[in-house]
Length: 209
Image (tube, rainbow, N blue to C red; front, side):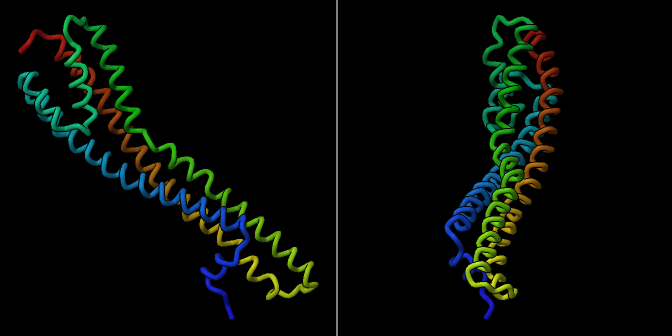
């Protein structure tokens, strides 16, 4: 009678079970981050587009402050709000430093939690491989103990071992795909911030409208 995947997991060694629990943790946290980053990056792009449209419309900066406060996920709006609040008596070079500082802070926010996805993508296959190697070692020890070299004697042990490899790949693949996708969106938003920073410097360096 063939053992199901659940039976193999239940009868696996302690190390294999530990490996599977670690991979489950990585997978659950990764999917949580994927959902969170998908939401926040999409909102950031949408809100930044709305704020940039309002900024280029040429209204009063005081009115833009009110608009920016409603777009809390937009890095452009956040940069504008922060720099505008500290603009008094600041020359162009001081304004430039302020803009760069807040641009860096917003960029760090966009990159936040992506490191975990990268870590999951790079380490999960190796963690799974550890469980596989250990499981195969147990299977061969079983051969020595039973003095049987038939495939049926080691099939369940090898199948148990290979489950950890599959689990490692199932944790790693979505994390790598999501990391690369999020990274491309963050880079796009970073370019938008750089372009906006120059426009903001020009706007704040002019006499009040």
